[in-house]
Every structure is written in C-alpha cells, then in structure tokens.
Image (tube, rainbow, N blue to C red; front, side):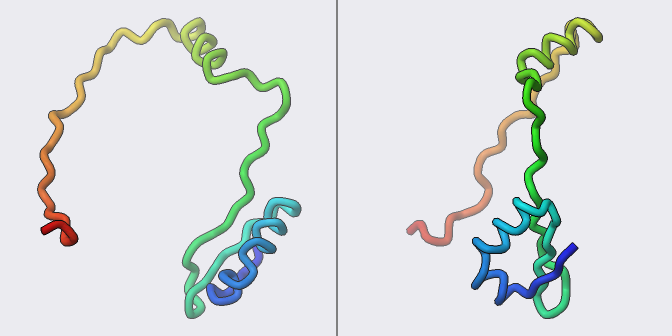
Length: 86
C-alpha cells in the first residue's frame, strides 16, 4: 500500500486515482503522518454476473420467501436548528 501526504494528494488527485485504478493498489492519504483515508480501487464485477433481481430470485428459490414483516420506527421531527435560517 502506498502512502501519500494530504497536500500532495490534493495536488495530484487525478493522477493518484488513475494509478489506483490501473494498478489496483490502494493509497493511504495521511495528515501530519497520521492515516486519514484510503483510496481503493472499485471491485471488478465479472461479465455475465446476474443482476440484483436474478440474485433475489435465486435467494427466494434457495431460502423461500421472507415472511417476517418489519415495522419502521416512528419518524422523528427535526430537533436541530439550522444556523443559517433566520
């Protein structure tokens, strides 16, 4: 894994992204020597991979239809005040 400082990462962001995408090696961005974030390549999805709907159908065939109905918690009202609103 490569390590690069935040200042340099800001200046060369596009180049770093191209490097990560082409080599597949993640890059850690540091601020004052401490790891801040990691830039990782997107996982490749092999050709012919089924869609989410096909995978859902396969799940239902294997495990059966989900019968448990869950209820969502009550929606809370906004409790914070926007500092920009007057």
